[in-house]
Image (cartoon, rainbow, N blue to C red; front, top):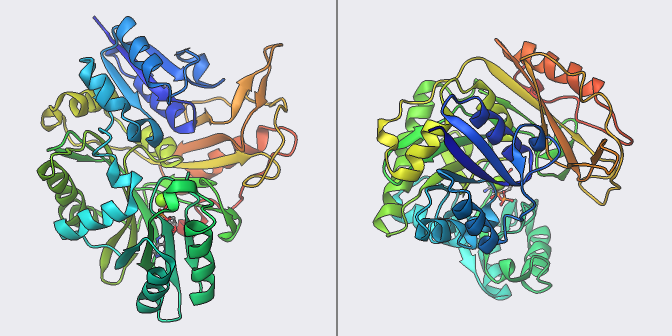
Length: 426
Ligand SMILES: Nc1ncnc2c1ncn2[C@@H]1O[C@H](COP(=O)(O)OP(=O)(O)O)[C@@H](O)[C@H]1O
Ligand SMILES: [Mg+2]
């Protein structure tokens, strides 16, 4: 009578989702497609890509799963949730139409304007001359942000210091098409200053449940310098988002987005992830994402005390209003162990030592770029290899546990930032 759940994806985020679902008394069977070496220890992994929609719908149907949870955004944008819904399979993941909240930044901007959601001023352009005028109008020679409209694997945004840097980014995106068709439209955006926070919420198109806020470290190196990455570390909760601010975020940002999308016939049914900048004038939306954040999920789910399966079934079946508000306990800090060279080109295939010795309830190791070699050893297979998470009653304890574990896991070339969570320690 227990639940059988299929999770689509292969990263640290999916490992955390599968791990948390595995804690539920209601869950009997967990399947992951395609998963990784870490997920394989706690779920059945099936070698199907999240972008192979036909094969995934077939797998979900044949295995009669009670719920599909979709990790990454690409399959959602390609219509995976629509296909599953058409086959009668409950899915926590948005339709392709609703995923436009992430897959088109210009569309999302227009939606936010219509809903009265506070966000950076922006102009969407489709030719270079118009783009240059927008850079002048919004940036006035100073900093301005240039964004490819479509999905660009987190690489489509340039925070430009001045008009010439902005124009160079515009040319690369629009004329050189470095992100392909994702750059046919470009959003020129006002530069906002302030700390950045990530808010993960769940919605079934009507009810909203908000998870603990998190702060990501996007830059490669200590001191927040160097190139942007997929995220080098993260912690949750954050003292810069108190209950009053969270209530404001819910009322002025999350609820209006959910209402506006439903009103447009594209109700949200999955994760609503708001990337926010906390400005002196209040929180403003940098972007919405249509799925769990990576690495935020790796620290938000470990402090969640309730049942994730209940919440996600509520999302999938339109009954989220009956689920209690999520409660969290303690703090979590996540440190990403990366391959030499990341975020540029990097070698892979190195054995990872120390994985079996990190013990205790308060350390969790979520795999991202790992695979099992023929001889059974776990080897590196990606740029971000592991997210090592420490939990504790306070941020310092969580931090110390994460770093002790990070030190003890080694592979050729492994490196990590040494200042994760320092912005709120001491
Ligand atoms: N208007 C803005 N002002 C200041 N920084 C910004 C602005 N927009 C984006 N950024 C920075 O660029 C990063 C990436 O932008 P985002 O819109 O989240 O795109 P994506 O995650 O798709 O690459 C943000 O996390 C933020 O640090
Ligand atoms: Mg982002």
